[in-house]
Length: 81
Image (cartoon, rainbow, N blue to C red; front, side, top):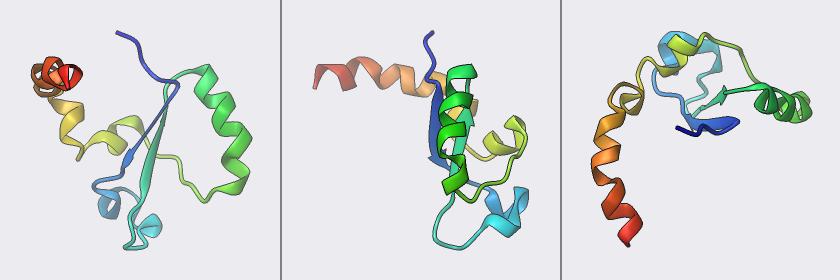
């Protein structure tokens, strides 16, 4: 399975994990997946407001992180369109 260098998602549960980052407008979660991702993030991080949280806390309330098989069932249909 290939994985991206960086994954960006909605940060569901931000109010429990990092309430000081919750502005009520939506907060993004950035997952740095490897060294390339860390290097890329390093290039832009000075222009961002961010807070490091554990991988587990970041994914706790994201349903897709728990049940990846659900997406796989629809994958063939998606690529036929």
